[in-house]
Image (cartoon, rainbow, N blue to C red; front, side, top):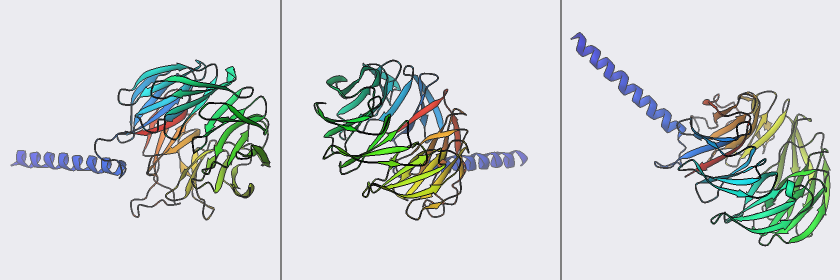
Length: 384
């Protein structure tokens, strides 16, 4: 009788454990992710020259892939299960095949590339080689360079317009922005901009580009149709990031030195609001479904949610040490935060179980802190 009771007890414990594991797995699996699909995150580790691959359902790192020194500019290919990035010190673009977690291509592009961008259909990848003063277009299927162009001195970043027709390049040493034909890389115009121009965002209607400065507390607004500088907007501190609302109506700019969030009306080209957020707002990402902006505070080690429609600031969400880059998974169920100082990835669920809607009351603490390599920076997410 005693053995039978023990057997029943063990069977019950095993059954309950299996049920609990299943419930956790279902809770972490986003509703759109049908069986057979994978959702992985890839983080570039600058100290190690590697990329960490993380299974976002199992919440575990399952591979560390050497990609070369100075990995930067990680981007998920729009249509194929590939992650593209650059080796800034190696001077090449690398391609990681997601199913095999192997580097399948290294494409020399010239010294000091820092970022890349894809054409809307994913057929082309664009890279500015800062040390070579050149811009290149790569056929993503054949992995061959099909066009080369010249911009100004130290072209920093190349961004393609949403219609795929225009390439906008920030020239750091010239204080200019080059506008190129995206198909041929022929120069269309050169427009003066803020000193040391760096980051670029382009409106969905292809009409304007907003460009940050690495030297002064300003951003430039460039008319891409008339190829002229419209204005330079001044802030209380240098811009740390640029996040465009998907409809293009507002631009959100965290600023560490001003300890807050600058909001720009992109129609009037004016600062429309400023929200004081904390110690050191570093980067942001936007959830279109809930119109919530999540801002990382690097020195305070937390994330600040902001309801942009009402300008309401939520209670901070604790992350790791030195949160910087952050991304939302497709559907906005999970917020991923790269922690530079603690070398890990914080995984935070953004939806409440009661309503299924985002809330400005703090979401649950990080579901997990996943170890990464040394000095993690860039982050890309791929579902395949």
